[in-house]
Length: 554
Image (cartoon, one colour):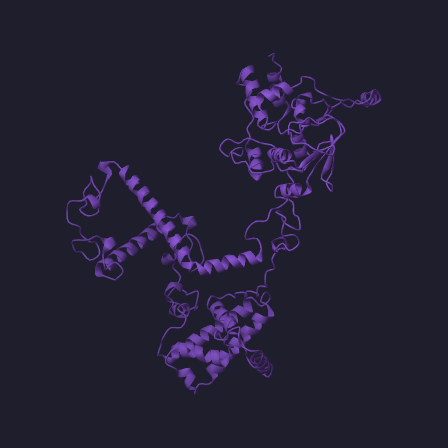
């Protein structure tokens, strides 16, 4: 049973409920500050705080008549006390004040909640009123019935399993999710219109919010981007609108037809912004202290690479005269397949790829998996074969793209046909398997996805571990459609409700049989040295102040 009015997040109050919001409110409860309050204020605040948990479904006048100043307690026998005194061990004090609300524990609805037959005291009251609770074999419809020692009460098992277990949530079964997907496919236009309407409403709210923010700006602080004067915005300007992109009158930059095109003015603005960005970075680098400056050329601190006295050495190709940022070989590799007509450059690119593969093999020989080592060796061997065939036309092709196509052909890359659908018959699949079995085992076969990852990894000097094939996810057993008993409102097989472990305790004055959903009220709760049998979330000091409030004469 859900009671949103009782579960407030603005003013947290801890209730007799197993709701997750109630558990969160328990961590936010703040005890009253007694040092700065009068005695009356202490009693009032303690009474109001305690009544949010103990008997919040009971009227104050009804509870006042139930209140008893007699606090039941027990103590050990004299022999035990004498034995404790001989051993010089202190006897724990008895928390009498925690028994203030003991009369409420006799109520039938509270006892049903304490026996873990309902998720809240209000739900327990609902079970009683609806005739789902029996006391001594007779249906009892009065939640205020006071139990006597020895009384047995039992609750309908289906209602207990519904209250303390997980419910069937719509969309939790596989068939229901399939129906939802089918509904989405059949109502695409309706769902798209709904999403568009929501986006339009959000845009309108943002526009209104921005307009309100603009209206709060003082008049003297408003700057017009059209005429450059203060006191108004561009949409309130009396001068004709002038576009900053095409330099024409009659419209602004937001509605300019040339906004997406490259114009001299736009190029000039972008160039100025890039220049300003470079100047800002240079100023920041020059403002660094000497101990924080690191030269990327010689690796020493105290200066930048522009101030280095050593000759510039490229960290990519190891040549002198330029740095890595201006390396032509790195730009050619980073750009991937770039068109070129120079056979020498094609050969240099292939040599660079071969050197990169060799460096990766030597530097990561102990960490690379065997499959990736095999792929790298295949990659190197194929490039070496291409370079050795000086008279072959493929080495003198017009573009680097043709060279990589030749590489693909040499490696016998398996193409994954996307046209073949699930309707291909079994004979074709059998023929493909037979063809795959007769392939030469010494051939250099490399799947196309691994080749792409290998090519990318070689150019970045690292190997990317290929993602393993994801196994089909199995649905959790509690999300499989309930085939055992479709008539039950709770989940079958039964599962306990969430956050039950924080509330799963049974007082000592109850004897509960969970299999029969029955319990016996053994005796009235009592206090004993070190503990009291009335569960309460508040300390004894708060209980004492509340007890003092109800001690007044009426």
